[in-house]
Length: 203
Image (tube, rainbow, N blue to C red; front, side, top):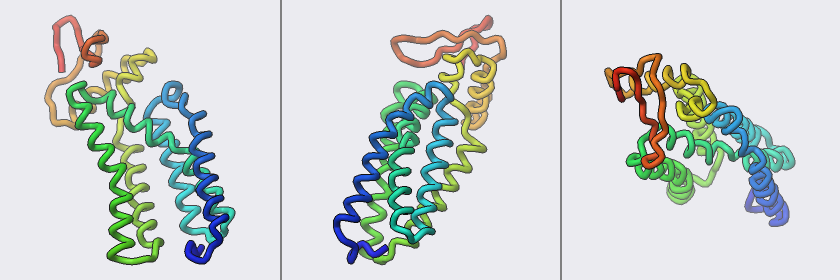
Protein backbone atom coordinates (compact mmCIF):
# COMPACT_ATOMS: atom_id res chain seq x y z
CA UNK A 1 0.00 0.00 0.00
CA UNK A 2 1.60 3.22 -1.18
CA UNK A 3 0.07 6.07 0.79
CA UNK A 4 1.86 8.64 -1.39
CA UNK A 5 0.44 7.49 -4.72
CA UNK A 6 -2.91 6.24 -3.42
CA UNK A 7 -5.96 8.42 -4.25
CA UNK A 8 -7.06 10.58 -1.35
CA UNK A 9 -10.56 9.07 -1.53
CA UNK A 10 -9.20 5.64 -0.63
CA UNK A 11 -7.21 7.03 2.29
CA UNK A 12 -10.31 8.91 3.48
CA UNK A 13 -12.31 5.68 3.30
CA UNK A 14 -9.87 3.92 5.61
CA UNK A 15 -10.03 6.78 8.12
CA UNK A 16 -13.84 6.90 7.91
CA UNK A 17 -14.14 3.15 8.52
CA UNK A 18 -11.88 3.46 11.55
CA UNK A 19 -14.01 6.17 13.14
CA UNK A 20 -17.24 4.35 12.29
CA UNK A 21 -15.80 1.34 14.08
CA UNK A 22 -14.76 3.57 16.97
CA UNK A 23 -18.32 4.90 17.30
CA UNK A 24 -19.83 1.42 17.18
CA UNK A 25 -17.27 0.28 19.74
CA UNK A 26 -19.28 2.10 22.36
CA UNK A 27 -21.74 -0.80 22.19
CA UNK A 28 -19.05 -2.97 23.81
CA UNK A 29 -18.80 -0.75 26.90
CA UNK A 30 -21.08 -2.99 29.07
CA UNK A 31 -18.50 -5.79 28.79
CA UNK A 32 -16.33 -4.65 31.75
CA UNK A 33 -19.30 -4.52 34.13
CA UNK A 34 -20.72 -7.86 33.02
CA UNK A 35 -17.62 -9.98 32.47
CA UNK A 36 -14.92 -8.13 34.38
CA UNK A 37 -12.07 -5.74 33.64
CA UNK A 38 -9.52 -8.48 32.95
CA UNK A 39 -11.66 -10.32 30.39
CA UNK A 40 -12.60 -7.09 28.64
CA UNK A 41 -8.99 -5.98 28.32
CA UNK A 42 -7.85 -9.38 27.08
CA UNK A 43 -10.73 -9.44 24.57
CA UNK A 44 -10.05 -5.92 23.32
CA UNK A 45 -6.28 -6.35 23.15
CA UNK A 46 -6.50 -9.73 21.38
CA UNK A 47 -8.91 -8.53 18.71
CA UNK A 48 -6.98 -5.29 18.28
CA UNK A 49 -3.71 -7.18 17.79
CA UNK A 50 -5.39 -9.54 15.32
CA UNK A 51 -6.42 -6.53 13.24
CA UNK A 52 -2.90 -5.09 13.42
CA UNK A 53 -1.43 -8.38 12.23
CA UNK A 54 -3.90 -8.28 9.33
CA UNK A 55 -2.73 -4.79 8.38
CA UNK A 56 0.95 -5.76 8.52
CA UNK A 57 0.85 -9.10 6.74
CA UNK A 58 -1.89 -8.48 4.17
CA UNK A 59 -1.38 -6.23 1.16
CA UNK A 60 -5.06 -6.25 0.18
CA UNK A 61 -6.64 -2.81 0.47
CA UNK A 62 -10.03 -4.08 1.62
CA UNK A 63 -8.54 -6.38 4.23
CA UNK A 64 -6.56 -3.52 5.65
CA UNK A 65 -9.61 -1.25 5.57
CA UNK A 66 -11.64 -3.85 7.49
CA UNK A 67 -8.79 -4.22 9.99
CA UNK A 68 -8.70 -0.47 10.59
CA UNK A 69 -12.42 -0.67 11.29
CA UNK A 70 -11.75 -3.52 13.69
CA UNK A 71 -9.12 -1.49 15.55
CA UNK A 72 -11.70 1.24 16.06
CA UNK A 73 -14.42 -1.24 17.02
CA UNK A 74 -12.35 -2.97 19.67
CA UNK A 75 -10.98 0.19 21.31
CA UNK A 76 -12.54 -0.89 24.59
CA UNK A 77 -9.03 -1.82 25.76
CA UNK A 78 -8.26 1.91 26.04
CA UNK A 79 -11.03 2.86 28.47
CA UNK A 80 -11.09 -0.32 30.56
CA UNK A 81 -7.39 0.03 31.37
CA UNK A 82 -8.16 3.27 33.26
CA UNK A 83 -11.03 1.68 35.18
CA UNK A 84 -9.02 -1.41 36.03
CA UNK A 85 -6.01 0.52 37.29
CA UNK A 86 -8.09 3.02 39.27
CA UNK A 87 -9.75 0.14 41.12
CA UNK A 88 -6.37 -1.24 42.18
CA UNK A 89 -4.88 1.94 43.71
CA UNK A 90 -5.81 4.34 46.49
CA UNK A 91 -7.49 7.64 45.60
CA UNK A 92 -4.34 9.65 46.31
CA UNK A 93 -2.45 7.51 43.77
CA UNK A 94 -5.00 7.87 40.95
CA UNK A 95 -3.52 11.09 39.47
CA UNK A 96 -0.13 9.40 39.12
CA UNK A 97 -1.75 6.27 37.71
CA UNK A 98 -3.67 8.33 35.15
CA UNK A 99 -0.48 10.20 34.19
CA UNK A 100 1.33 6.92 33.60
CA UNK A 101 -1.41 5.60 31.30
CA UNK A 102 -1.63 8.90 29.43
CA UNK A 103 2.15 8.95 28.95
CA UNK A 104 2.21 5.44 27.52
CA UNK A 105 -0.83 6.25 25.39
CA UNK A 106 0.92 9.29 23.88
CA UNK A 107 4.28 7.54 23.44
CA UNK A 108 3.46 5.78 20.12
CA UNK A 109 2.74 9.11 18.40
CA UNK A 110 6.04 10.58 19.65
CA UNK A 111 8.01 7.50 18.63
CA UNK A 112 6.31 7.40 15.21
CA UNK A 113 7.12 11.06 14.49
CA UNK A 114 10.76 10.62 15.53
CA UNK A 115 11.04 7.41 13.51
CA UNK A 116 9.70 8.91 10.28
CA UNK A 117 11.58 12.17 10.72
CA UNK A 118 15.03 10.85 11.60
CA UNK A 119 15.25 7.09 11.03
CA UNK A 120 13.26 5.76 8.09
CA UNK A 121 10.19 6.34 5.93
CA UNK A 122 9.37 2.63 5.85
CA UNK A 123 6.54 1.86 8.26
CA UNK A 124 6.83 -1.94 8.35
CA UNK A 125 9.72 -2.28 10.88
CA UNK A 126 8.06 0.19 13.24
CA UNK A 127 4.72 -1.57 13.08
CA UNK A 128 6.37 -4.94 13.56
CA UNK A 129 8.03 -3.72 16.76
CA UNK A 130 4.70 -2.31 17.94
CA UNK A 131 3.08 -5.71 17.32
CA UNK A 132 5.75 -7.48 19.35
CA UNK A 133 5.33 -5.02 22.23
CA UNK A 134 1.55 -5.43 22.10
CA UNK A 135 1.85 -9.22 22.04
CA UNK A 136 4.19 -9.12 25.05
CA UNK A 137 1.68 -6.90 26.87
CA UNK A 138 -1.10 -9.39 26.14
CA UNK A 139 0.98 -12.25 27.55
CA UNK A 140 1.65 -10.26 30.73
CA UNK A 141 -2.06 -9.50 31.16
CA UNK A 142 -3.05 -13.13 30.66
CA UNK A 143 -0.49 -14.66 33.01
CA UNK A 144 0.29 -11.97 35.58
CA UNK A 145 -2.59 -9.51 36.00
CA UNK A 146 -5.37 -10.29 38.51
CA UNK A 147 -9.00 -9.29 38.10
CA UNK A 148 -10.07 -6.09 39.82
CA UNK A 149 -10.80 -6.93 43.48
CA UNK A 150 -13.41 -4.18 43.53
CA UNK A 151 -15.31 -5.72 40.62
CA UNK A 152 -15.15 -9.13 42.28
CA UNK A 153 -16.53 -7.71 45.52
CA UNK A 154 -19.36 -5.91 43.76
CA UNK A 155 -20.29 -9.19 42.09
CA UNK A 156 -20.28 -11.21 45.29
CA UNK A 157 -16.99 -13.04 44.64
CA UNK A 158 -15.41 -12.30 48.01
CA UNK A 159 -13.01 -15.25 48.12
CA UNK A 160 -11.57 -14.39 44.70
CA UNK A 161 -11.27 -10.74 45.74
CA UNK A 162 -9.28 -11.69 48.84
CA UNK A 163 -7.08 -13.99 46.79
CA UNK A 164 -6.36 -11.23 44.28
CA UNK A 165 -5.72 -8.63 46.99
CA UNK A 166 -3.22 -10.96 48.62
CA UNK A 167 -1.61 -11.56 45.23
CA UNK A 168 -1.26 -7.80 44.75
CA UNK A 169 0.26 -7.53 48.24
CA UNK A 170 2.73 -10.31 47.39
CA UNK A 171 3.60 -8.64 44.08
CA UNK A 172 4.28 -5.38 45.94
CA UNK A 173 6.55 -7.24 48.40
CA UNK A 174 4.18 -6.67 51.30
CA UNK A 175 4.17 -9.19 54.14
CA UNK A 176 0.60 -8.35 55.16
CA UNK A 177 -2.29 -10.55 54.05
CA UNK A 178 -6.07 -10.41 54.31
CA UNK A 179 -7.66 -13.34 56.17
CA UNK A 180 -10.34 -15.39 54.46
CA UNK A 181 -13.02 -14.23 56.95
CA UNK A 182 -12.47 -10.53 56.20
CA UNK A 183 -15.48 -8.27 55.78
CA UNK A 184 -15.37 -5.43 53.26
CA UNK A 185 -16.91 -2.00 53.73
CA UNK A 186 -17.05 0.72 51.09
CA UNK A 187 -15.64 4.06 52.24
CA UNK A 188 -17.89 6.50 50.37
CA UNK A 189 -15.69 9.52 51.15
CA UNK A 190 -12.32 8.19 50.01
CA UNK A 191 -13.72 5.71 47.45
CA UNK A 192 -11.23 3.13 48.71
CA UNK A 193 -11.86 -0.40 49.87
CA UNK A 194 -11.46 -0.55 53.63
CA UNK A 195 -10.87 -4.02 55.00
CA UNK A 196 -12.26 -4.91 58.39
CA UNK A 197 -12.27 -8.25 60.19
CA UNK A 198 -12.60 -9.54 63.68
CA UNK A 199 -9.02 -8.62 64.49
CA UNK A 200 -9.26 -5.17 62.83
CA UNK A 201 -6.42 -6.08 60.46
CA UNK A 202 -5.85 -3.86 57.47
CA UNK A 203 -3.53 -3.66 54.47
